[in-house]
Length: 626
Image 1 (cartoon, rainbow, N blue to C red):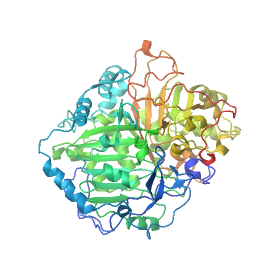
Image 2 (cartoon, one colour):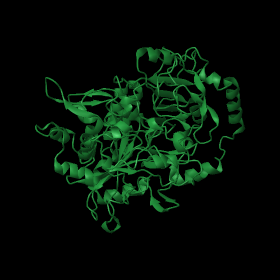
Image 3 (spheres, rainbow, N blue to C red):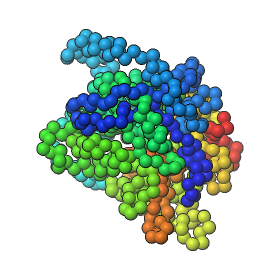
Image 4 (cartoon, rainbow, N blue to C red):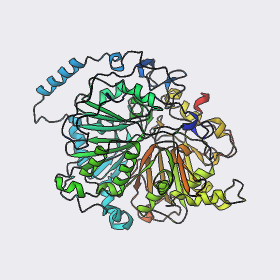
């Protein structure tokens, strides 16, 4: 599909209407001083504006009780909250302020907060839960109910001894930031966790409170596809924390309307509007969280809404976190090499239009441990020159090669998605070859070969049939889940795509959570060597990208020049997590197990999953028809 018809591409393009944000820029005047991730001073932005309105009450998918839903979460059908809008909403300018609708007395809140601070002794001990968490996070070894599991700290140490590829990635940035300490950081080596889910035992999961740590949070750069302002008010202290929202706006007029609706109570709130294609979404969920002595980078699959973070106990997500220590010697900041991970992170932030001073302030942190991973992204727009190789599936292949994880032979791919576009063999082959380190040209050359007639070579098709598995929930799985159909607002595929002759139904497997009854909103791609008994390179992608051309792009050639051009609709981001090699006798059947991943990435679904097959007897969850 070379065209950009909004209803013939995939789910994001077909559901192209913009979602309004409830957090937008406070005033049109710039702050006196630039916001930096390491800034200690306050920004006094214009506070004479209000929040947008909250829409009328809808029903919580878990409790069925009426709750207030922000304008940006539009009710679809019988009150279920969808990850996409049904149709544009009227202007919020004539409605009451969102904060006013919440009934918040800001003066009283501030007085109560100051009173709590006075009552709290300077060196008071944290509560019991916090103490237990700190002990757990400071340990290099963690155990769970399912048995012993080593953290990425331990894995990284063992991996460097046996895998020179991982060892080389760790050595990228060890010279300029040696005068820092990571001993007190919760996640100095990086970690992947499931989101907590209400009603389930805690094991290898994390709550949004544990991610944000609002009592210590000084600055937060946050982005999301969905926002719930009441939820955010309960998780971030807007009186003390500077907040920078990377937001979606479909036009300049919408930006202006949004700018007229910022809260009075915020200490400092600013906004960034990434440039958008005529169709597509700002789907990235990246968070940059600044604390007194370190920066936390968070790449989740969930939005800033309560059900994505387990509060209703019906949906789960996945989160990557890493804590980077502040380089205490300012003389080292200008010479700090942030490495490949930091370079791509900054490239992505600059493309979004984030303030340059804020992007530059990342150099004040030690990225040494982050460079065992790779930050990968999709930037909305058309990319030519040398830029096409840095984003989308082309950027994925580039990142795989840079970590020396490229595999010449066939690979096994297990892809967990909550949304499927109008996928066909072109996109799947592009991802398949990118997972081997290809820059995108291999699939393009095959696709453009004369006489192909839109059919991939037999060997390429066989590679997909034998080695590519896609996990997506069936209609029965959704209906039998804890939240039922009301919890499936972010699970989407359309029947016209599913029933198309080109749709790879034979690769789809029913996605059922190992936490029985939960629906999975995670986006994970697991890649490993094909042969059982082999200890070879493997990695996982964890992030926001579903399985669609909007999320990964499509490579074509420029008219006139014939040079490569990559077109992407969405903004997405994720992280490549290398999987430490295992002993051959501990590796199971690659086609039915993901045993090598469990110590690094908590696998959310039952493996291998029931196959749908080529018939139409087993049906997926079709959100437009339920």
